[in-house]
Image (cartoon, rainbow, N blue to C red):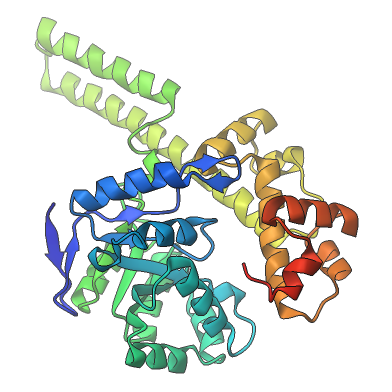
Length: 369
């Protein structure tokens, strides 16, 4: 394994990190045994940066169980605060405490504001006391480095870089995103400011390594055709070769565009679901929203997330209901309605199936999530 030195703290970080978003599932739960085999393989090969988040279902718990088996001192944990859940002063402490419990640790090496995509979001949580809270946690050694993960545009990224004295940042960057997301311009600006950059999604969740089959076949076909012509005809003119290369690049650009559109469709559907839980959500209406055939959307969504659309909707509704149950200022019936469940009995059945307890029992036990 190769390592790079973090210029801020001289720490050696493995050039490859391990993203804990896409652990394999057993039913609706993380396949702990398989995940631990994969985590151990990464650790044995020198990986020492493991990235998770509060909202990655089951991820922090899975990583915590693994690290508790004698691996904690070999690993830098990177996890993320869901700042979009913060409503009042004190919320960040509650979420952080829960994350420490899930991860079975008393500190986090790299802590990020999750998807901090514009300065307005940062200014909002500053009013809730986030800056003072960060300073307190760093002084106590519970957080060693503070940063943010980003999925917005370059201009917003540059503004966020200036909004606080960040220890590091984490951006989506690959050959499709040189001019989107933070982009090459944002990457260079962070470097010029001396802010270490962690790269996520270098292969877009595998899309850049495994293009859609029809597009891949077209690209291979054109490549073979060019190889044959080069050997058999020696390309009668340089102009002919130029044209063939241009054709190949056009097909490849179409492949990348297809991958981008698929990625955007799943992201759009997930975002819509999260923001419209109280509405009736079904496969046909979601597919129409992103101009896809319902069957194809279902296939694409399952491939990219590991969840069927129906199960993702239910899981997201249950996650939000847990948050609302912990606040104790809404009745269980109102929570059921706010999260899109038709009636309280159906809500209770789904909640118990997912958590093993009823909403009332969950609230009585202090709403552990």
